[in-house]
Amino acid sequence: MKTTNTLRIVSIFGLFLLHTAVIAQQPAPADTIVFTSGKQIAVRLDELGLDEVKYHAIDDNVVVSVEKTDVARIHMGNGKIIHMTADAFNVGFSKEVMRKTHVVKVEFLSFALDHITMSYEQVLKPWMNLEVRATGIGAGNQNMQDQCVGFGVAGGIKFISRPDHLSRGMKLGHPLHGRYVRPELVFNRFTSVERHNDTYTWSSGYSTIYERSPIHYTNVAFNVVLGKQRFLGDGVTLDTWVGIGYGFQSIDGEQANEEALKSYCYNYAILGADLPIAVSAGISLGVAF
Image 1: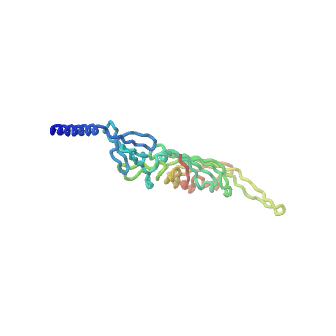
Image 2: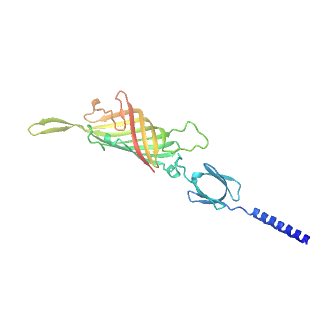
Image 3: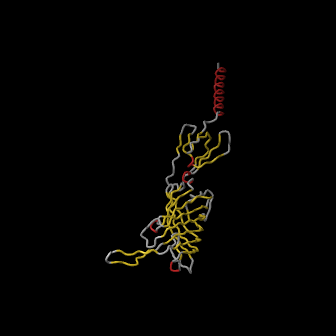
């Protein structure tokens, strides 16, 4: 009887060990990572850090890490669900905003100065953008003393300043944001027609208005522009700049002479015929897409 009880105990203990071994050999339930893009993958979660999630594939031991901002939630094998919440103080741009590499801008004060200037900027590669501008002269403030009609174009490459110090893990800021240097070539041509009162008759109350022959102005300048463009919100830009360079002006017409030379050329100003230095400044608002 005692031998029978001993065999029974040994058998139960053996079955327990066998059951434990079978359970130990069964793989643990997989974890599922759900990305913000909607993609889902079954993995073994290794680490959930402050900035990244580390995991390895079920049939592979190679550890892969992804940014937490790319993960929406994690379904653990034990049934627990971990939701990733966005950091309200994260200074980085979202991927949707980073994909906005084109911007259309308008010079904010151009209407008050009797012209309108629109510009287009696009990213060529990190730290280098292309910007072109078009100006309609005479479209704006009609109360200016000297009214002109014409057009202008300009273009240049914008070199955006890089950080002075680089460290591992740094992220590139938005390619439309930052301080920059932009060498640019400016061309415009406009026509000026001056009017003046020559006689006034008291009996009729009318004056005789004479128009001088039109004077045509052709202006060319090469400027080096220093500025800073700020990327606001999710797609608004604010660009401020000053520039200096060389400016040249030629005039033609019956009344063309040195007295008819103009220092204000809409896109810039020339300091004088004997000092062909061009200066410019401006502010523009834009919408990125």
